Image (cartoon, rainbow, N blue to C red):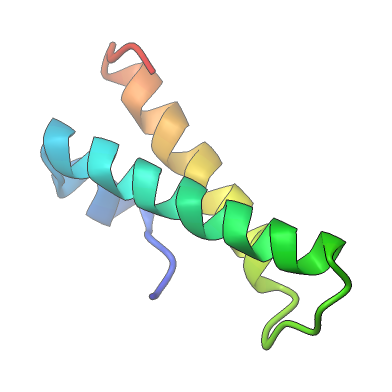
Length: 68
């Protein structure tokens, strides 16, 4: 899944943003579980990219006045 850019996020509806946020949080928790369990993951930089994308989503939602 590619990382979302600000322009792409702003074009989404509120329902899409909320579902995408849930999806990204789920993926991040799976990656964190694998890291803490000592397993090797394909792309170690993916966790950082996911955290940044989640923050980007939350920031734009907050700007639009949506409670998170």
